[in-house]
Amino acid sequence: MAARATISPGKTLDEKAESREHRLQVGRDRRERLSRSKLGETTALKRSFHPIETLLEAGKGRVAALLPVKYSRMSVSPFAFFRGAVSIMAADLANEPHTGLMVQLCGDAHVQNLGSFEGPDGRLVFDINDFDETIPGPWEWDVKRMAASIVLAGLESHHSRSACAGAVEALAGTYCHLIEELAEQPVLVAARYQIHRVQRAQAVSAALQQAARASSDDLLKKYTENGARGRAHFKRVEHVLWRLHGKRRQEILESLPLYRQSLAPERLHLFDFFHPLDVAFKIVGTGSVGLRDYVVLMEGNGPGDPLFLQIKQEVASAYASCLKDTSYAHQGQRVAEGQRRVQPSSDLLLGWTRVGDHDFLVRQLNDHKGSVDLNRLRGDGLRSLSIVAGELLARGHARSGDALTIKGYIGNCDKALKAIVKYGLDYAEATQADYELFRRAIKEERVKIAGNAGS
Image 1 (cartoon, rainbow, N blue to C red):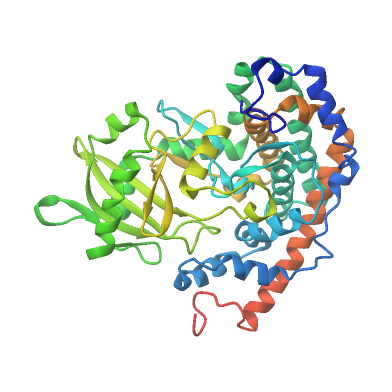
Image 2: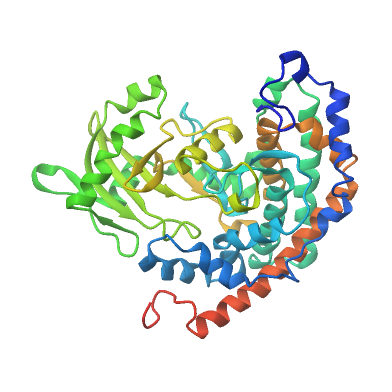
């Protein structure tokens, strides 16, 4: 677990070893700063800023020609809009009081940022899989964003409002109870805590099965073709990926030596068996559209040993302006180190580099990867996924913060649980209203989407 935010680096080990009761009391005392019932209050329905202007402001510095693609993807539904509008929720949270009990936030906690991937030891794991917005922040911000996402995803998968409320209750209850459990465990035991219920959740099981069926051949077939002398290179995949040439291609390849410096020696040894074959630009996700994203096709022990290395631009977290002491020399390093604090098992080749004036995260474009399908959330699927989400957030927060202080604040769970349910429902309602403003802005052509004249 990381050192607690309340402790200064200059203190001795004895001074740092505060009693359990003192740490619990620190949490209880934070109720004076923000009562548990007020966790449920949001200012989103009475803002002093315009949400669409905030969204457009967040697009500055991205590839302008790709923003209509991002906005087109966001226009599909309120949940899709929510996924691409973390800047709006960050601004809302900044206007609301918080506990000040700091953890390493995922930052963009929502149900489709959970997924399965291959761990360093080759086993498939299910965990949070997107850390672009990661930053130290109050624990409840992740829980609130996940709660709102559960309501919006639930409505999109044809659940009633009451069923969505029940799923958020499962999220909050699981989070509270696991935080309490991890607070009572030895520090290193809590840091290694394994979540065992994932196979019993339908959406999670489907994501793991999807990942298990995937192979490197799938990516080879999807993104490459053979050229002269049978050498593989990228092919154009319409609206998704295209091959790079000339100066831009060379700049990407020249960023690899700096990336090597970010790898631990044992991981660098493995990476050095690979050599690059080709480079492409790729459009990814919803919230990430407009950021520069490159893929380097590499080869190890011959044509049957491909490596797809993703080099993804990282900008400051949407929460950076809301929090103190959040300046980072390198945004890719921020993401990589934040991910390692939260996850027990991260990408073997996770690192960072720089291309021109921009910071980049480097990781594998994983062939063994599975995502949450909203169709799998029907029936009991939403609630079972919510339970897993609560466990993942609690484990990540216990690894990167102080579970005892959070336990002290939460207490017997009832008040915090009811407040989180209220917040999830109310913020989902605010997002639906924002979505209607967004659709109106598209209709009035203040927001351009792919396919519109002039987009």
